[in-house]
Every structure is written in structure tokens, then in C-alpha cells.
Length: 361
Figure 1 (tube, helix red, strand yellow):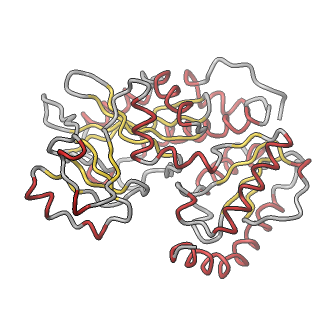
Figure 2: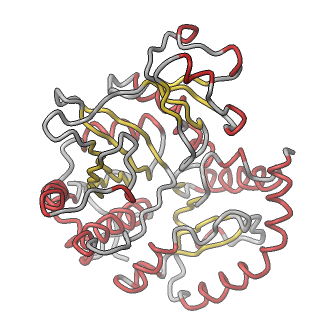
Figure 3: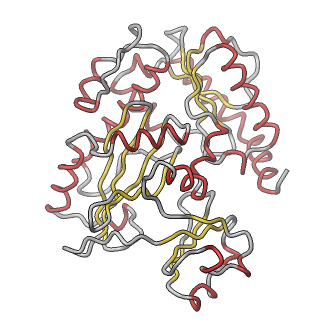
């Protein structure tokens, strides 16, 4: 067990009791149905990370919210007859931080689900397929443009030529999200990279997607939830590393984003093929276009933060945020062989896949 896993084990033990009580109280309020979706989390790592979805369902579609039953690992004494779907809500890649006992127990639970024909959303062993290097390798096989990424196992001996890369290139974490990155233009800058700040560094090619017209960068986000898929946002930025905090917000960019959000994503079929190749169910794709209009997929994130944007001037995104929650709920209902709730059908609109649904909830 690594030092990180040991810390998580201690932290999880300390926090298990309060979180378990919270779960018990919430589950008691939603015990009107005997068929449910088992949601597995770990007390040491943000067990309430996706509560925005549960809170929205409770407000907008309470009958669907009642189907979700959050539980903490290790979770023993299970009546499997109650569950139709199982989903581990865990930060990827889970094997990097989960205590070994928790990881082993989760594997056992998934095996028991498979034996009983219970659908599993984002099997935990598949989360690591979305790391920067693994994801790039899988996506590139589909002839979809993605930055070539190489794991840097020996920073001292690394050169761009040794890996057939060219400057500029990006040094980033391979197995983490929201981590620092370094844009490197030459060997002098490469020698200054603070390698000790990276736990698992990777070198990736830099693809310039700056718009030649206005000099800005655009990052689109598409949320794939099973066969459901919806546009989630378009961020316009002056910086090559596009973040929401650096969003250029004016009438023009708002109109551009709304135009993107109001229609099904033009890359729906391509990104759905990528999702299937990654063997994931729920994944958020960030992508851009090169100046000549070619698609570039930056990242596949199986544990995205899809909460409502905050701050002044973001209210116009609310219906599209709700649509992404409807897509996720639709994925669970379809996996459990339920018919979509009319409220979800209305929210999904043109983004509803043409597939037959199951029985009524």
C-alpha cells in the first residue's frame, strides 16, 4: 500500500460514520420503490461530489431520484434483488488512491453484479483507459485527432527527440485532472520544468487551435451518457489552456455558445464511437477545431464536474445544464430498462436517441 493509499484508508475510517448516517437518512426519504440504482462511493474521496445531480432530480423529477441509493464501500449484507443498476462514483483512476481493501471489495461487488445481470455504469477498472496516454492511444486508433502523449518515466533523460516529439510541447499529469501544466517551447525551457511537482508526468504535443480571425481559443464540451449525448458548453478564451474562469463573456460569445447548445452536437456519432472504444458509459469530452476545421479531442473525463456554473451572466446556461442531467438520468433509466420520464424527454428534445425504451418507472 502506498503512502497515499494509507492516508486515504485513515481518512476514510474517520469519515465513514458521519457519511454513513447522512446516507441512511437520505435513503430513508427515498424508499418508496423496491427497485433501485446502487451508487457506490468512498468516504475518503468526495462522496457527495455528484450531489448536484441528485439534488436536481429531487427537485425536478422526484420519482427518478427515488431510484438512486447512495452507499459507502465496503457495503456488506446486500439484498441484490433490489438493484437493477450499479455505478461506482469514484475519481479516476481509482486504483491510484483507493486503499487495497476497498479496491478488492469493489471488484467483488462488480463481479456479483455481473453474475446477476445487473448493469454497471463506468466499471471502475475501465476508468484508467481515459488517462492522457492511454486515452490518446485508444482515440487515435479511431483516426480521431488527439494530442500524442508519452509517459515520461525518466525526466532527466527525456528529450523531445527521444520520443519523436517536436516543440512546442506540453508537460502535464498523466493520471490527474485539474493539475498544473507547462508549455515548453525549446530545450532551455524543458530544462527548467519542475519535474518534482509531477506525480506521473506525460509529454504531449501542442496543437494550435487559435482562431485566425479573432485570435481566441474555443473549447467545446460534449457529455456522453450511454447513447444519450448533449452539448454542455462552449468557452472562448484568450489563453491556450481554456478554463471557465478565463472565459471571454460578451454578447458575441454568449450568442455563439447558445447557437452551439441549441442543436445536437455535430460530432455526436464520432464521440459516441470514442466512448465505446474507451469502454465507458458516462464521459465528458473536451474538444476544439484546428484553423482548417478539423476536430481535436483534448480529453475524455469519466468523472466530470457538471454542476451549475456560478457567477454573473451564467443564467442562460441553466436549461442546458438541466438537459445534461436529463441525459445522465436517461442513461440510468435505460440501463435499468425503465421508460423515460416525460419531463426528461422534454428536456432532451432533439438530443433524445431513437431507441426503444423499457418498462414504465
